[in-house]
Image 1: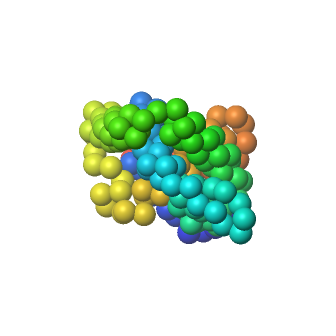
Image 2 (image 1 turned 90 degrees about the vertical axis):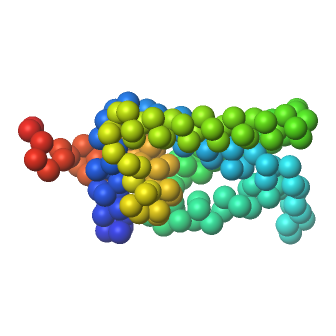
Length: 170
């Protein structure tokens, strides 16, 4: 785990202390990721003789970024991305274009609403990405790190994520 990732994660954690906010982020991040890739799943692309979608190509740069931040978390997110890319392909294959765009709009509204509610209602502060736009890409890493910790893995991340905020009683 890079020192850059440790610093970014520690900063991100300060905006995500409330468990309900964290739960809202799990759904919000998944919905927003799916909303981002769903329209791109309409476009089929052939690269080096292999058929894929624009969605699969579009996620490659961010997957590389996540791998560079932390290989294990990046690999887990790759697995989740494959599931979501497959779901998007299935949705596109079984619905009309209008239905796909309607679902995309619903996913965006619900995804953004869950983020806003999580921060405003439970955390009582603005989202982390308002202060640091790069935090938009840290959300999936944070959610995956929380999952790894819950499963008993990655004590190094638990130290960063589960530390008490400054001034809080132990």
